[in-house]
Length: 639
Image 1 (cartoon, helix red, strand yellow):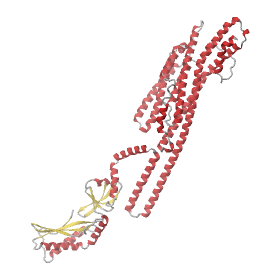
Image 2 (image 1 turned 180 degrees about the horizontal axis):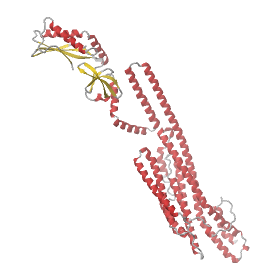
Image 3 (image 1 turned 90 degrees about the vertical axis):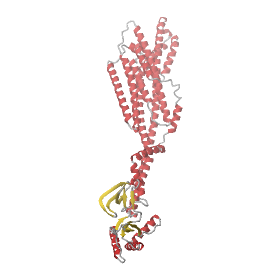
Image 4 (image 1 turned 120 degrees about the horizontal axis):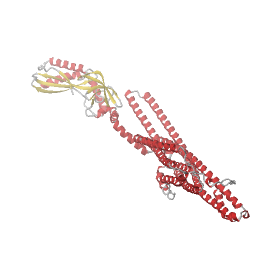
């Protein structure tokens, strides 16, 4: 029973370690060289895969500020860190086991060198690794050039792609260094002694991981920083909802890829643990046989051999336990990380469904609002066509309708696509600044339009002078003013057949536009005569003024009617127009100038002819008046 008492701790440890494994099957004890079948190449592959998985998982970030997502992300990263720490612990333990096995093999008397376990195509793998590093560096340089030239809306996606390529480049460099080191191995002795340990140290220096003691200090700060930007899909606009939905789908795909990578890594860890479990079961089976033997079955001469067997089994079990325990911790961490990833993915899927639902609601409200505005526009159009008969007023109302409908659609689109007033104000600020700079003349013309259609504005048919061009108003547009050009002398004007077009902003220029007063359609003309040596200039002046007034009496009522319309429109009382005279003596005699209104609706030239004929007739009547040389009646237009 002494042997059983000595070996009982080993048996107890074995059963505690493999309590959940199938019952051990008695097997023949394996040779010492086969107790730990994991090679240096497998250790390096396991480390590089775990490092790549850890980097990919650490790079996951859905950009959400929800507390649940932050906690799930932090848990997944914590489990990944533990898995990486366990993998480095396993690699160091396996390196120690390989070193011990190599030293024992070298100490044997008739031992033969173990053939190299490096693959025959290691040089080809090294070439592929170098090519991959060069390819990723070229992609990174090309992406940097694209980021500098890309618009602000695309830079976030390009920066995410650059981060992923940079992580792959770092991993490719590590794998290239590892393959170079493996290629330099000559025998398993080198690989298991100094070469493998150098690789482990190099990988650990490039991928440092803490012990987890201070990892939780920054988590409350992270939660506080993101608490102010919590995502509420019910209050977001279409732009934010669409970008969030795309981001959630991208995060779902990334988490799905990392979860598949986790499953692959877990299967690889299980493949590494399987031969170790088999070796441990063999040791437990052999220890069971020794412990179940009766004391009488062992001769005193065999006690020494039995003690050596127990010591060898204990050493082997200790070596295997130092390797298999970190692997078990790695497998447990991978399983926990996979659970966190699955919960995280479910959370993101729920947020994606909520975002898409509110996006559809927003789009439906936007479409319904647009249809309602267009329906109101159609009703407004029919009302204008049915109740407004004056063309000018109809054009004005139609213009107001277009402005109001456009403004309503713009507000609907703005509040539909953007939810934050700050973002709307920023957008409107940039848009306003750009429009004010690029369309300053157009905006000024649009503002001038409302002056032109005002109370004292222009009407179709008005005769105006714009920048020295006289014409008749054809149309007053929202941006431009159209005139039919008129030429001639005085009031005897006729169209040239040319169309003059001016921007409405011309009214803001000094002395740019002249037109008739509202309601008044007449102008002033003057007739001048010179009487030689008059005996009574007051009587001569009265006779000539009376002659002009007799002609004016024929159209006086039309002029006074226009005057009343002007007073009614402007609320300004004025004196009715009538002929008036002015006399002065010159070296040729008495010069009398008589001014009189002339209606533009009639023929001003015909009225001037009548005035001349009437003055000549008055001069021929008794007492006769004698015109001075070159003093016969002459008409002119008063400026």
